Length: 379
Image (cartoon, rainbow, N blue to C red; front, side):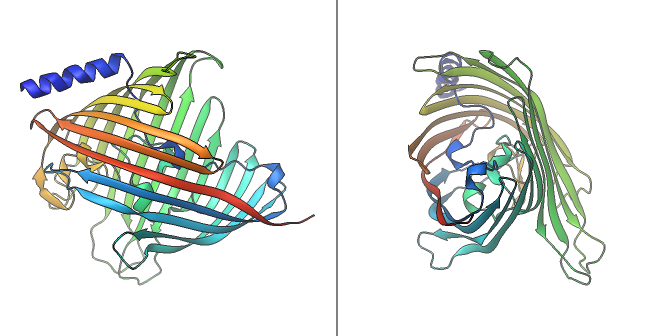
């Protein structure tokens, strides 16, 4: 191992033992949206603007990923109406505007129907509480997709209590009718987390289970494209020690194991049909700062929505391959709520390939405005 990486590994151990990071499924928590409905918002016609300005620069030089810079603003404007804290309808539009490009990207209608079966259990039809709201680990989901990807749409069930987080959804990415020349495309997902320790315990143990299945195909189209059914599964054990008052609010260790399989393998597009990865992550919360250091060890792993640096090949150029991965990850993040509905965040991330002796990195900032206005109160 090169002296530079001996020094880097020593820094990793120091961060891990002292003040590491949020948790393995780190993402900017200020980008989350709650599906909870409040009875105080009943019989109100509201206008909600959810606007996020972002700048994220990925300096990637790995054979399996290329760098890019994302400067822009994503906006969702919605009219909403809620009935008795149990039902809500939202109608609007969502688009992304990149700096330096005139046209709007991903301009789509936004329609959501939501029914609170219980105060903690919601059914959603139409546009989902997607993206980072699924709380997937980074090898399975690249969190910057929150800025750039099309809004998810389909069916979702979300349960959130003090001991359970359960999110099950179908994102119907491309709907077809009989005779269409392109196949249907959809993604099924499940993200479940169960707290094992007692309520109020300083030491918290959690068992996660995360599943993604991507499908392309169908019976009523005329496409000659090959059938695709591939997926990822992750589980493990997450721990957190709440330290109480002081600079560091909590520290912990999360250990994930992840798998990849491809039922209809196509070596030209996806050179491997199965693989695995192990991801231990030390973390600490020193709000408004969060720190993280992890080690990703994998073989022939791929995730269709994951951070590409964790993969074993470049999906845009499958001949570029790194079958076995040994990756050291570090992250420093800052997040703060400035006013109600207004938050700011920034992060620096490094991905050190210990086999190649090279480091890729990214950095960025975001500013979010998310505040509904009451247009009319009905009796």
